[in-house]
Amino acid sequence: MQTSVTKRGQTVIPASIRKKYHIDAGVRLVWLDDGDTIRVVPVHHDPLLSLRGCGREKNYTKKLLEERKRDRSRENSIDEP
Image (cartoon, rainbow, N blue to C red; front, side):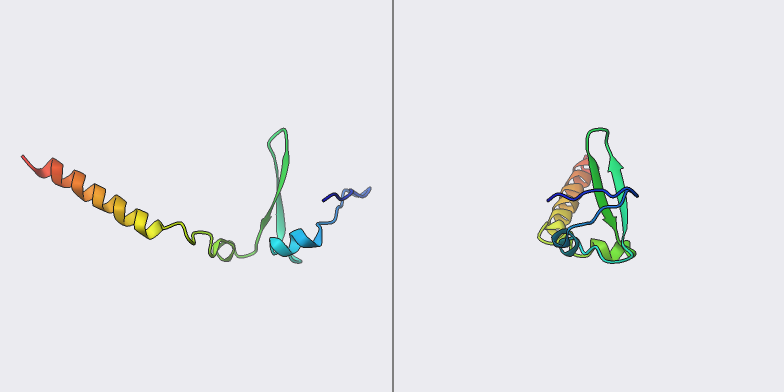
């Protein structure tokens, strides 16, 4: 997709991108410049709401329980004479 910039420095966000990333009126955008590329990141008015669902299907509970089991095992091996 390609857009142009007006004399005032304005551009249009294509509708498909606005829909995909839920960029509605009032959503603020952060411009990140790493020296080679520019990224535009939407920052929603409720940052917690914008994180909703981002951890799905990552098995965080399973990973946490496995890590706790390893910790207990290490602690028990230290406590044994």
